[in-house]
Length: 154
Image (cartoon, rainbow, N blue to C red; front, side, top):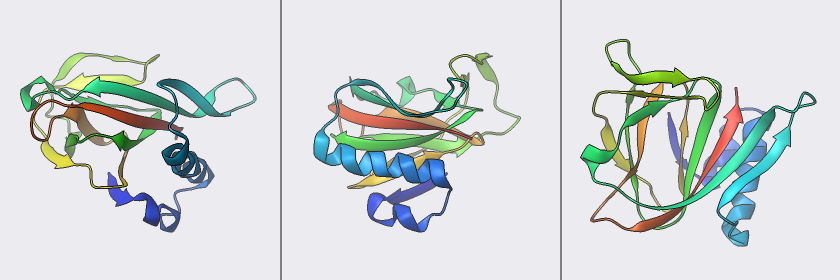
């Protein structure tokens, strides 16, 4: 997991796909993208190499946030509006699957509890396959957030 701010994103050197993802995020701050699915880069075979899901939802109580993980894509999560925390813990073999991994959706859920980490102003999280995370956690009471999750094919 990486936690930083967009001002420092260019210093990370994570590769061309992450550079495109961060460039899209920087533009999104000024353009206020619509809620929905936004394709950023497609491979010749039609695979979406980079895409963004812009979401609006109400944050939840910690006990209602379930740890998830991905295998094919990294998440770059960024808040456009509101306050939220993401619970984090390493994905280890002792965590029990809550339901089978969905290959099509590239998502699995495990039992366990993570450490809540709030988003900072202009802050982002990069979450890799080894990072179990529970997004959507309220900070102080339930509130509506607008968030971008950019998915980067690894």
